[in-house]
Amino acid sequence: MARTVRVGTRGSTLALAQTRIVIRELAKRWPDYRFEVVKIKTTGDKILDVALAKIGDKGLFTKELEVALLKREIDLAVHSMKDVPTVLPEGLVIGAVLPREYPGDVLVSRTGKTLGELPPGARVGTSSLRRQAQLRYYRPDLALIPVRGNLTTRLNKLKAGDFDALVLAWAGLARLGLEGSATERLPYTICLPAVSQGAIGVEIRADDPEIARLVGAVDDAPSRAEVVAERAFMRRLEGGCQVPIGAVASVTGTVLTIEGMVADLEGSRLYRDRMSGQVAHAAETGVRLAEKLLSSGAGAVLSAIREGAPGS
Ligand SMILES: NCc1[nH]cc(CCC(=O)O)c1CC(=O)O
Image (tube, rainbow, N blue to C red; front, side, top):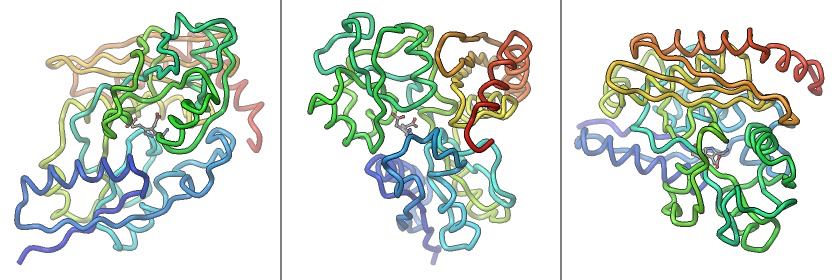
């Protein structure tokens, strides 16, 4: 009799939808195993009224799941890779990256107007420093309003008239079946997504070969290479939620191309560039792009943000 696999997840609607996808794919390939959902509350689920950049702690949405993995209370943890810090705790690895959704951001606007059509001073809800900086750079006239809470909370605030538009990850909307509410996909030339946006990852213990074999069957090599490149880019820049950083990699055949961006908090200076390399050298390509940006002026922006950051 095969064992029951305990699948750890946050309890948000999006997290549960992602976990259902992972379990569906695993169950197809491993019909003899049972998969049991274990919901775990993370710090990020408890603190809802403060912008993530202000909390400043790494792993807000992942740490409690990782602790449960290490204590062997669960066998795998399902994450939005975007929430996973670039350095994992000792003893844990990413066992699988599922086929990625479209990684970009979308505008959801109350009146159906696109970003370019929003009237001067329109109120756009987002707490992400990355989205704020890129929106300010493109449309300095917009009023950016902090918003947190899960996707449905945000959409309800939009409906209630708290703001005129919201910027959200397309993937999150799509996984809740809400992609129809997107007004416009924001082009990468205006808004680069967060590192690993749109990718679901499965974290496991490094010393659990049985689970590694199970989850390895749902790993998507191109998606994994993209995530590896973007995370290497981020790690080289040592950026977290406190710095406006965006990147998106894409694999075509044996070539991986990554575009990346670093901006100051005001969105007055923005550095972006791209780099290509062999898929087999995904991490190096991400690092090379980071170094190119650092030497072209992004380094000074990052130092200035770090000096000004509270508690650093
Ligand atoms: N910031 C929270 C978060 N974490 C993952 C997603 C969406 C799914 C994904 O990017 O994989 C979202 C919502 C959003 O940014 O709009």
